[in-house]
Amino acid sequence: MTSSRVTPLKPAAADPAGEATVNAGATNGRPVLQVEGVNKIYANGTVALKGADLTVRQGEFVSLLGPSGCGKSTLLRIMAGLGDVTSGTIKFWEQDYGVVGDKGRKLAFVFQNATLMPWARVRKNVRLPLDLEHQSGPETEQKIDQALAMVGLSGFDNSFPRELSGGMQMRASIARAMVTEPNLLLMDEPFGALDALTRAHLQDSLMEIHAQLGTTVIMITHDVDEAVLLSDRIVMMTNGPAATIGEILDVKLPRPRNRLALAEDADFIHYRQQVLEFLYDKQKNPQIEKKPTDPARKLQEVACKPASSQDDAAGDTGKAATGSNKTRAA
Ligand SMILES: Nc1ncnc2c1ncn2[C@@H]1O[C@H](COP(=O)(O)OP(=O)(O)OP(=O)(O)O)[C@@H](O)[C@H]1O
Ligand SMILES: [Mg+2]
Image (tube, rainbow, N blue to C red; front, side):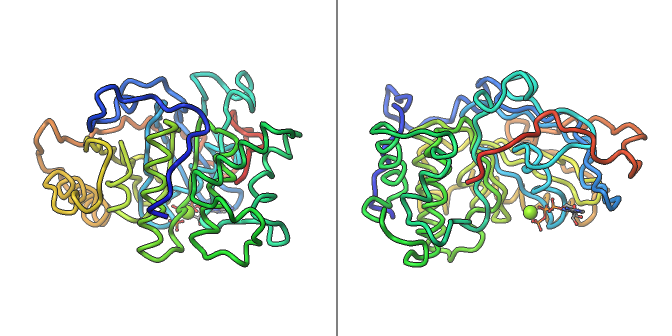
């Protein structure tokens, strides 16, 4: 949908100079989400996460990368309240979920598969979260129109999911997430099942949505180029079991970003190299010495709190999550 225009659900913060800028929210924004000392042990004894700490700021685009099975989905689901922590805390706007509640947290989740209701037309699928909130009337219809326009699906209201391509189904899934005007959009490999061209178009759409609405996004991906292209920060997780946040790479490429121009950009290539080095070098041999780097480009080390010994016990599973509760699943 390269030709489609993104229609904002609410006015976007204007860039007064209209020039390319680095996303300031990534460093100065208010914390939307804080993961503090999170440990996760599944009931079967698998230690999925150990001492994960991460702060995500308003308006940031953060990618989560790491080896398969390291705990990315576990962490994202905990952030969404779809899974409990064994110990540790998840905070929204620097407060517990119990204080901010669903209205304060306001998040939406996009899965790898579009997960549309096959028996319902596109419009009904997109309106689902609003139906669940018992919203109706002209304003609701307008929100649905805008969400569909935003992902380039205007005119497909009456189609059934089976009548859409895989990429269009994923667009409908993103529209369903965005119709709630979330503060926080969580995506678990949303483009993983798509071909390269469709994926590229959806990445462009997501960049436009992010630029116009300023939505905070946390996205899991295995695609290094995708992570560098889209992100303000790339959070790289260590090998599991007992995975944690390994390194965080600040991607200071100015926005808006153009994939073709960036393909030969020295900074883009440098960032890409840093991620590949982490994934295929340091994670293959975690003891590897880190090479000194230019301080301006130095990877940020994340202080990972050591988990207390009691958290290693399988018997500690199932403690209630601070952030747990129902989530708007998109
Ligand atoms: N419900 C569960 N019960 C027990 N163990 C689980 C459960 N879900 C995940 N795990 C385990 O937790 C670890 C992390 O799994 P997770 O799905 O979070 O990894 P991931 O990084 O998302 O992997 P991938 O990149 O392949 O999607 C794995 O060892 C997995 O086997
Ligand atoms: Mg996963």
